[in-house]
Length: 344
Image (cartoon, rainbow, N blue to C red):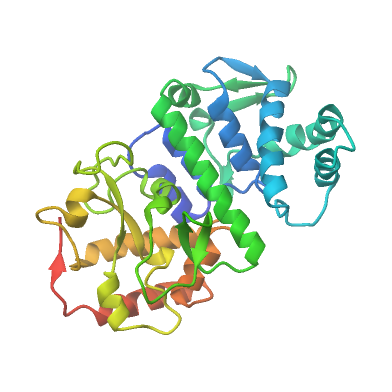
């Protein structure tokens, strides 16, 4: 990507650093999109359900989009930041069998085509460059002109599923934040399908956090940079595992006030080889350059649009703003400087 209009430095660095993967745009939107409410997640999932083509009609996009929005609204009526709207009222009426799908969709169309399609690529105080967008909006003919970027994803079943799952995972994070008004540490517990837990004194199951953490690392191992896979043989060296950056066993013995060792601030994706291979990290501390990488990642969390991971990373570190985040980060790492260090 070559666009320079994104004003937030950390967001721009995420977009402009690394490989020119077709996933970069979708991940940037999912993570940092300025779109209202949860529209960006619903539209990202919608694009993954479309077949590769040169263009798609507004109505075809809208039907799938509203289906996704309705399914989430039914489970969590906290999809909007300003209470009820004409759209939420229409969805509620449809769920009560008071109005038909067509009548509800007629209300939804007024929001979709004016608020959603034009804002999808807005991130970090700017907009993703046109050459890297997933579509252009042809308002005159009421179609989305799909780009090669999105077609490449649509043509690859693995990439299609990856974007779909990452959008869904981030959507659930936002919903849980809205439900709780303030989000504690991110952990996705399989048994109750929630992303948050206050457990600080025991290891917890982290496997389901993979889809949530993956886009920040662009699908790469946090340490060695190799491409990760979350499917297939668990014994493969590139199998994605969730790692406590500062080992749980270490941080638990030296607790910091308000800091959750299981918090999202301390979780990264690692390949199996780096995490627990022959020369793996295990319970060692990574060298300083990886701490700087983690700090940069957590700054990205703090730059996100409201009601997302920013609240989670701040809460799990026991801080209230970006400045305190950096100070707390460095204090924790400095405390363990004397310990043996590991590098892949």
